[in-house]
Image (spheres, rainbow, N blue to C red):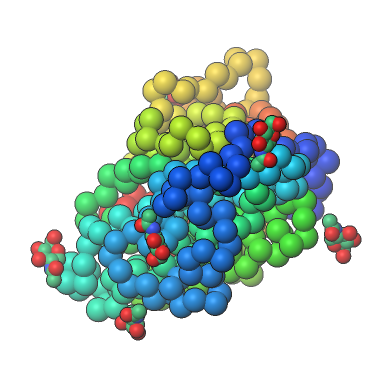
Length: 369
Ligand SMILES: *[C@@H]1O[C@H](CO)[C@@H](O)[C@H](O)[C@H]1NC(C)=O
Ligand SMILES: *[C@@H]1O[C@H](CO)[C@@H](O)[C@H](O)[C@H]1NC(C)=O
Ligand SMILES: *[C@@H]1O[C@H](CO)[C@@H](O)[C@H](O)[C@H]1NC(C)=O
Ligand SMILES: *[C@@H]1O[C@H](CO)[C@@H](O)[C@H](O)[C@H]1NC(C)=O
Ligand SMILES: *[C@@H]1O[C@H](CO)[C@@H](O)[C@H](O)[C@H]1NC(C)=O
Ligand SMILES: *[C@@H]1O[C@H](CO)[C@@H](O)[C@H](O)[C@H]1NC(C)=O
């Protein structure tokens, strides 16, 4: 039941639909109130990524640029949307949640809190630096969206985290998940330059992840020969919507993500599994208002992704039981979905998930090291 990624990915590419950025109202520059977010349309405004050191060492605890603007940037041209505008609108929507996660950390904790919890004295400074990098990502993605499409603004987010250890566990999950959806977005990119930009951003997230593995978890920073490719990036983006305060997004923002399958979310019973390769696992569908619909006469599968591989295991709809593939190396990231087809070869074959399982260290999944 093992399928090499090459066949999986070619299947994805074959059914790739041409995506178009969501239509939006346009504004003419003269109609822009001064001081509004519309100034962000100007790529020369504010610190410039990779010129200014601002996105490495702003150091401020208040929201850095461009996170200090709260309204979307409306199109200033009626021209055709850029080929990858929708991709970067989706990515900027995800980036605002990630930026907000780090800004929340900067505002909620301080150096002494991390030190007293037993972490290195520079932990808080690193969180600030990562926050500054994420602000730079937001600015880079704004610039990747053409002036014929809306650049989304941040919503409000809630993370339900109070302790430094839960925060650092979430940091590890956020970074490794973003490495995975960035890799998946490359399958949607039309422009070669977009693909290269996505790799460059994923590399930066990988550095953040490696820092946490060394300094926070005192582990090897390495995760085997390849991090995980998951073909349906928007399904991961969809899971980030749990952090958005309902109704808090500015009215002019495009929908996020587009397209969205709104799949039932997938979790697991903590007592059922170690999450290590070969462990049994009982899945759970944790959102009571979005439950899966399984046909009694249909066979379903748990499909696990790791590195460039996917491995399909049985899934029992009566018990919700499956097994973590014993073949996988216990490194990096596993992603699991429930599918009606071995290998989950099409996006439509995915019926629930994905579930993010971090193997390094496996305890971060429950946030209670
Ligand atoms: C930010 O903090 C770092 C580390 O303490 C320091 O090297 C850098 O000069 C600071 N940057 C600014 C702009 O204060
Ligand atoms: C946001 O921050 C930038 C960079 O510090 C600054 O130039 C701009 O005036 C700020 N804008 C608002 C609305 O706070
Ligand atoms: C876009 O087209 C509309 C309708 O023709 C027009 O009113 C508007 O000024 C145009 N906007 C820009 C930025 O050219
Ligand atoms: C750090 O945060 C803790 C908990 O909120 C607080 O008690 C402490 O005074 C803060 N320390 C500094 C140096 O701000
Ligand atoms: C992307 O790169 C490939 C290989 O060099 C080239 O054949 C193709 O035309 C490029 N596509 C675009 C849209 O530039
Ligand atoms: C399996 O999941 C379904 C859907 O959430 C739920 O109704 C059922 O109670 C679960 N069964 C077991 C044995 O956990």
